[in-house]
Length: 78
Image 1: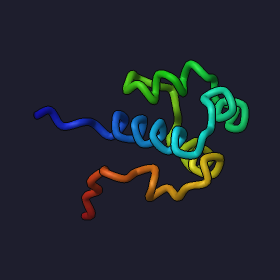
Image 2: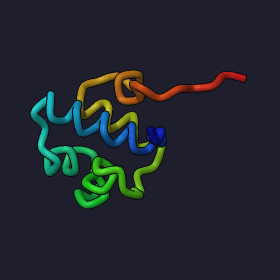
Image 3: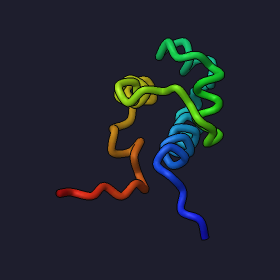
């Protein structure tokens, strides 16, 4: 089984959370000022221009923690 990369996991998590919270892609785009096509690509696992600095804003709009947004990602500590 192929491991999913971090961006795929983040995109799927965002989609699942958005669906649970009943937030449309249009609403998320408007509230985060991120182009809807960028968000759509991100959710589908395609390359996206979402910057790491935008994740806290996305989490805030979806009313979840960053930990919930990054669920399923293994972080390695030095």
